[in-house]
Amino acid sequence: MTYTYLELEHMSQDEHAPFRENIPAYAIGALDVEDITTLESHLKTCAICQAELAEYRSVTIGLLQSAPPKVPSPELRRRLAARLPKHQPQTRNAVFSFLSQFSIRQLATAAIIAILLASNLHSNLQLRDLKQQQAILAERLSSEQKALALLAYPETQTLAVNANIKELTGSMLVDKAQNTAVLFLWHLPQLENTKTYQAWLVDATGDRISGGLFNASSDQDYTTVTIQSPVPMNNFIRIGVTIEPQGGSQKPTGPRVLTVNL
Amino acid sequence: MTGIDDNKLISQVALGDENAFMAIYDHYASRVHGLTLRILGNDMLAEEATQDTFLKLWSRARQYLAEQGPLLPWLLTIARHVALDRLRLETRRPTLSDSNDPDNAWQTIPDLETLSDESRWRSMYFAVQTLHPDQRKVIELAYYQGMSQSEIADVLGWPLGTVKTRLRAAMEKLRETWNET
Image (cartoon, rainbow over all chains, first blue to last red; front, side):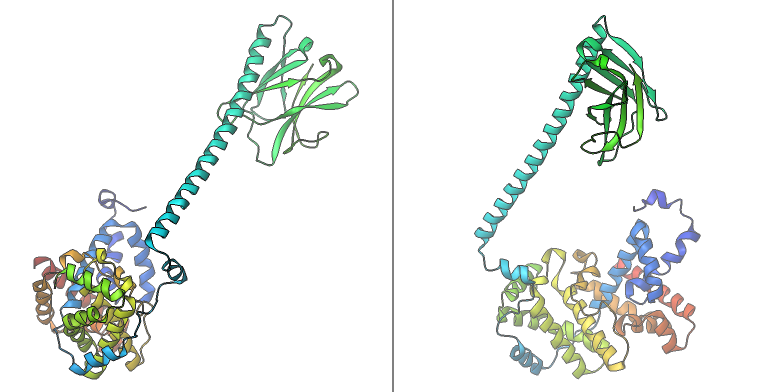
């Protein structure tokens, strides 16, 4: 961050002076090594000192050019001409040497192809992201439509969510005739990428089957989850949610997040 | 010589054109030699440094970027580095870390568009001559001998604080002169 002149007006002279007094010596190359690092750190953030340094560096260029001209001996010119390598040394790096064997047209064509490929790759990545977002939105829309449908159905029950996480609240709509339940969960925490939430349908003997995997909504405070039971919902006495490794588990292995008694 | 001529010549040098190289030498050799002589104080050593400077120009011509400024300050910055290196070698003083690479010349050349007016650097020469002798000594040792403030204090037997004060005062006077011209 570089301070503006306005901000620097608030910097007291005492704070600023130790740096400013070293600028002339720094510009002329005479500042001692132990003071250089401190001043260079300050210069990175101080517009006033940068401007002052630029002025003093102009002075050093004046000094550079102020030496009276002196014509060297004619012999130096001859020596110099004799010492010139016959071919201009290739001082550029290997990349430059490699590139120099191609014509400008070839290099331009290669550059255009590279730009097109990069552009295509970028577009594909954007398309993939859009498809992912579209799938998430479609899934959410489906859940919310089911929830609305359940709300309108006379047999639908509303059940309380017993949360094991602080601030997590919610309720569940259940239509046992349709073997469908929709969870409404507020303030469900986001999980790291390696974890997922998994719903479980629990029967009277304690046996469980998976009710599906889901993640917390990232752009709104509540999450809706539709649980479709493959067998009659009346077989179950409870629905639970645990945290499991990404991809889900055969049986609960992680901490319990909530339960709903059916 | 105009900047346009310099640019054309240096681009020809980058392609290995010896005639273009010698044209630059003929135009600027006295300026380079004047600086190396001022730093080294010995004509033979100064000619060697002048020669090394132009050999660096020959080998590094591709690195010259016209948009970063005129050729002369770049060439003189290289000459100063070469001469100070030689001086340190002769006097067994340590070499500065940045002294070998002509690329570093760009980092120390500011505001190049204002530097083409030769009357300004001539006035700078007279400004140095009219400094108080103690201040002039400090400037000479710092810029033309490449000494740090501590080295100057050792050489002159002055307290370090005195060196710092005199250097600051001298630079401030030179800055005023530079801004007035």
